[in-house]
Image (cartoon, rainbow, N blue to C red; front, side, top):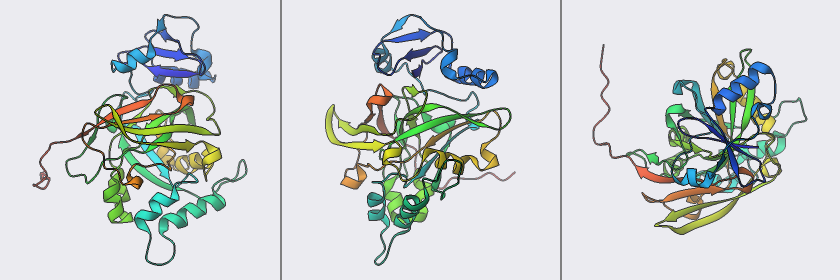
Length: 323
């Protein structure tokens, strides 16, 4: 089942192999997920049958689709992720940080994942790299601009899969579903020094437009492209799903939710699982107005966002007021 959140209320629902969507009026996926937790039932069972048919692609073209889930309080929505989790992800990162001799920390981390990132069910494997993106204030809807700060050295796409989790009243993380994600980052800043990775990740990210409810397919095959003036200037396939990962989803989930901070009842988490495909690795520098487009058949409509660059002045330091 694929769900989309319509701005202003209403949910679009369709089967994974069905082109036509139907309307669940007045609903939000956030409310449906909370009701599923309260009733202890699958989310899909709460979606009523029937309803007005919708032109989902037309709604997306009009900018009428929002993120699949938003928390009413953006400060209670956490955007986080894990890197070096895919079997092809080490080469691009290693090229940024390779030392004159020996292995880079990136390659060491990647090999740790290969050796211990897929433990037996119920066991704990090696912990992955982890990063913080921001709160719901930096979550960008499909079609809206991804705004790069004026001080940024780069603004590049990262095609990923993200999962949405609501924390139940007893502190149990409940996975609502998966969506496409653009984990927008500053790769030039990251390349200066690996310790700048945390800075490079403090950027907006986009999700959706459709939420896949149920299990994540083992083998996800998608396409990431950059369009400039309507023309494709870069395009490359990307792979995801556990068949193409050095960590299992369960292991990545454990190492995020093992922290009590992330199991506070009522909070919403959006966690990104990493990528192996970057235009930056191919020497591409996105320009303002370029459109990032990420697509994969399992997730329905593509996720597309234009690149914008903030215009705030950068020559003066931020002033802090003393109270």
